[in-house]
Amino acid sequence: DAGITQSPRHKVTETGTPVTLRCHQTENHRYMYWYRQDPGHGLRLIHYSYGVKDTDKGEVSDGYSVSRSKTEDFLLTLESATSSQTSVYFCAIKETTNYGYTFGSGTRLTVV
Amino acid sequence: KQEVTQIPAALSVPEGENLVLNCSFTDSAIYNLQWFRQDPGKGLTSLLLIQSSQREQTSGRLNASLDKSSGRSTLYIAASQPGDSATYLCAVDNTGGFKTIFGAGTRLFVKA
Image (cartoon, rainbow over all chains, first blue to last red; front, side, top):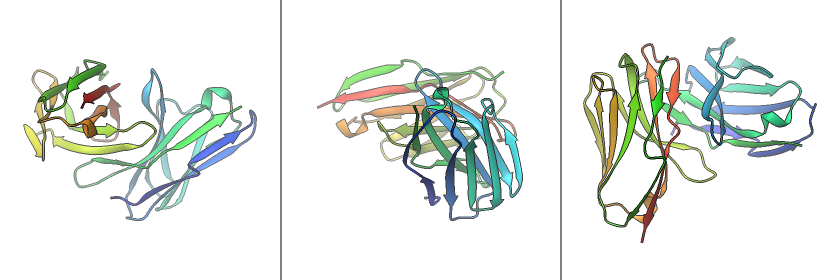
């Protein structure tokens, strides 16, 4: 596997607080992604990265920011958490050989 | 704009049955198509990836086909088992491979 670790696995936070989710990979993949998965909406892209310090927005990027200062780490920050950001967040890498995805195990975030 | 549809949304079959899951897409200019399995509360596990130039891929009891001209892919599962019960998602990468559209998934239940 691509050695993807997401942390934390579960988090409960209060509305208005900042939250940072971490994605760590061990195989030097260039492309990394953050998705959220919600019933009725499926998987939606939040942000992605195509290299250190190179990131771009996805379809649901409002209220989220990302950083990638090292190849192995891709951080997702909810600047001021809202209840609408309660979701399961998945990190993924994309192989540069066949552009296939490998997903992490997910972070279940609840904003109360 | 690419749209990906999976029908049916849910399927229940008796153990041992051969079955086909469908994935339709509206824009034939794809880079690849990937099938995933997702167990409840878990991440996505990649099953098969078909490149744009390929017609099918096989892994064990699974066979995925791709017909770009008709905008369809099928996932064939032979001799289904209760352990195959999960949600199956297809994902289409548009040309360039940087953005992906996911289907909503087919929830499969295999009865013992």
